[in-house]
Length: 111
Length: 115
Image (cartoon, rainbow over all chains, first blue to last red; front, top):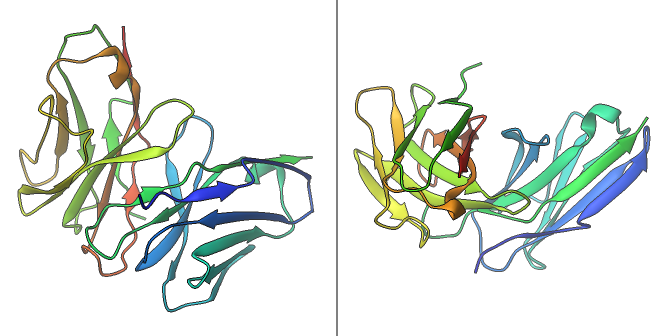
């Protein structure tokens, strides 16, 4: 299946530190997106990176994509307590228009 | 900024009952989706909808499920006879285009509890 897998499953850091989460997927994609989910809440879109892009920035977020390794990473710099949430990568497939979500990384930022 | 809305935010129902979950997608979007997330598990695709018909559905989306766009703004998911295992958070999403590298925007979800 196309399912993405994030690692680590859980990450706990001190406020101000950087947090890095990784996502791996199995088949070719058009794009990869990162979403954030606060506990029991909806999914908030963070950033989209296309298959022909290698790196993208948005504020304190930096996303990389390595299509040869079928992997992506999300870096949150200078983390804040408010960044505490679960982070998911979602990939499309070259056919169809559904997203496949990974299992998520649960990030805890300790004030 | 436009957003996807969903109602109700929470619903409790008895096993065997029918439920209808409602969504209002972003107004200029043409593709609509339902996903679900069982507690502690990953978000799973259910169905996509375009031009008043289902364009894709997953194995989860069996005969107990149906979707409808009854008017120009609402998009609904109906579960005809709920089972205990239907308890989950249900997310609606919409996008402007199909696979044109467009973001899917998600609603806040409806938490369904089947007793």
